[in-house]
Image 1 (cartoon, rainbow, N blue to C red):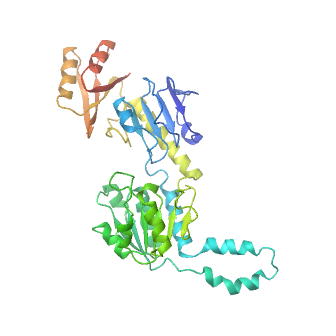
Image 2: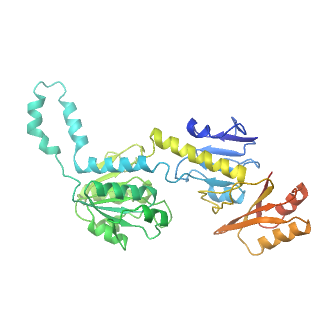
Image 3: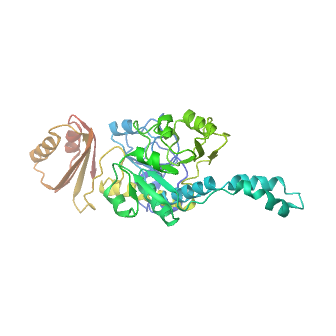
Length: 387
């Protein structure tokens, strides 16, 4: 029986996929799997039995990925499971920026005791009128699961949409409307668009990408939306741009001490993926990833090891080996098994930067001695035999 521990509340819709072969335990000690949402794991010590961590969401900055890899722990996330929830909030953010809906609502509340509110409204409403989205240019930086949905939805609102992503996947390219303008550089987005929304991961080359230099290329009165990560936008530079009027509105799902209370900033309390549907979808995907890995050894949507799928395990035993991506690893594995008169029926190997993963279906029984000898090969991080 496999044991799993939840560091945060995980939707029962997902946990219900884990059948009688799984036990939900109250501690991470001895658990085969951990499911997590936002709990910080950098200071955690991991049990030697821990095989997998599944993040019910896309961001994994709360998990020590490299340490997990070195300890032979596969980390999954759930890309795209919350994409629709974020997309809808991005569209809402554009509408809030285009028309001063928040200001208008607040103004009405100030007159809640006034009997002539209807008459006064007709005189004052022009102050909150704003503009329409139709006909405006939207630039979408990053065409992953969320960016594609935002771009396609904006087209249906009548916007002229530009997309930029030098690493767009084949799957995303298929889902992207042919009516999207494909920007060749991010500077084209900055120069051309009235609205700019960012949907890229927080990497060393993307942190602070929206800074004073990028903003200087933008139109006067541009609207910037950030529903990806707070660190993508330089906080001091965006405040300066709002104060000067260069940026008309900055809509973000990430409250920071610098931006809260700044005129022109619409700050949302990180609600992007906080819908019942998103939480259910993330939980279902996370549970499915854990189940497939523990029962079949397959890796899907890992963030620290290569994805690798050899299908459902058959009647024989399956050896899975997490190891460093160094020369002659496969040769050592096959030689060792040959010396033990074990025939390899199916084998696959995938690598991702400095880490790799090998799966072997063998005939016969893998003894503890064989398992120990495989684990002793220099560069091997963890060996598991699925029986």
